[in-house]
Amino acid sequence: MTETNFESMRRAMVSNQLRTWAVSDPRVVSAMGTVAREAFVPTDRAALAYVDTLMPVSEGRALNTPATTGRLLTTLGVHAGEKVLVIGAATGYSAALLGQLGAAVVALEEDQALVDAASKALAGHAHVAVVKGPLAQGWSQGAPYDAILIDGAVEHVPDAIKAQLKDGGRLAGGIVERGVTRLASGRKAGNALALTDFVDAETAILPGFASPKGFVF
Image (cartoon, rainbow, N blue to C red; front, side, top):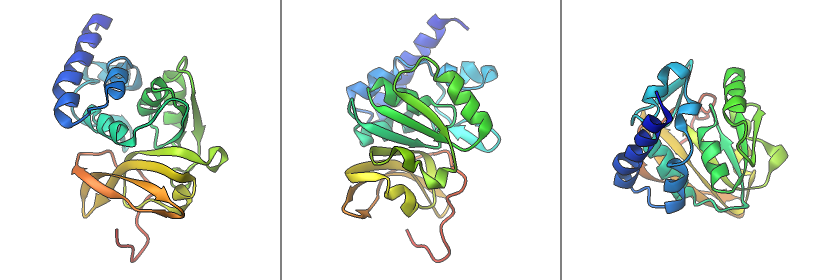
């Protein structure tokens, strides 16, 4: 498939998926119309890179749909120069978009195959560092962050991750509740971070975030 074909697919993604689903930040739209998503999916699935469905990238792991990615980035409202942590970076697509927005990005992944894939796909993308570690622990070495993107859905956000946000910092990601995935966001105030869900969305579920026994969202 030629680069011209992929460019056409990116334009169609912007028109048919992003603009129709409240992805309203022109910077996010521009970044998603520029970054080659096909470079972040398995080679044999490149032709499907812009389809509006979860994209399997390894056993039990997938990239969010383009619309979900765009909505999360729009909600997060990242600006150039901010420090951002991506939890569950997978092959690095969202991290690449944040780098395109001018953020200094730490892309955290725990699966070695995905770490290797992200490192390869992100070669040449400025301002993005790929690191390996347990997703549920975040990456305290780079804290505090202006924003954290949980690039998938979790049953709860561990305190260790909340602690890595600056006071006033933002977090956005997916929440799993009774088998339903929703997108949610919040801003840290002091030591508190309350998340508010804003839309139901098919979202890739991240491992290692089971709710503690007795936890109520």
